[in-house]
Image 1 (tube, rainbow, N blue to C red):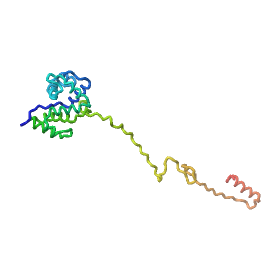
Image 2 (image 1 turned 60 degrees about the horizontal axis):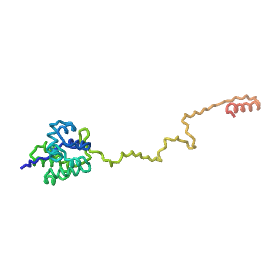
Image 3 (image 1 turned 180 degrees about the vertical axis):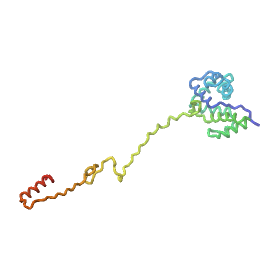
Image 4 (image 1 turned 60 degrees about the vertical axis):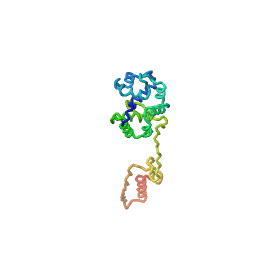
Length: 229
């Protein structure tokens, strides 16, 4: 026979939003109007989906008055895991705790357990198992951002490492393009096109009756004007 005991079911986003609100200020009591105001939901939804669960775990009494000791543990990150464990021990049977003792428990199997022991359908059992897993997780770093559940980054994470620039070793077989090449004599190579050689053939006709002095003068002038010597 299915166990008809009532188990708490509080949506994870509303649960974490309530923790954030309690860190700012612990209210004297919780009403549907209070929940609707801080969670952007209707009073009807708050009365059906959140308020009954808060009563069941003992955070508020039948009139909505806050249990101050539980409220302090609820909002304290250091005491939060102990707070969750107390709720588990108070609200759930030992059979469930023994079968699924930690946050790594199979969620589908937990859901099946609630379906079998409460007679609820998949949707209701999913909500029951989700809140149970949230209590098992007991992670105070979980927060709500833009309506979704996320975990804060650890302060122990190191800063982003600077990119390492590897020094490329120079290959001795590859010529250094940053330096001009030199010829074997060590002088800079001339990129200009070389001037073509010019060959001049000179024919000299000397009269047979020319005197030696005339012949000598001819060759001296040739050396002077043609060879610049």
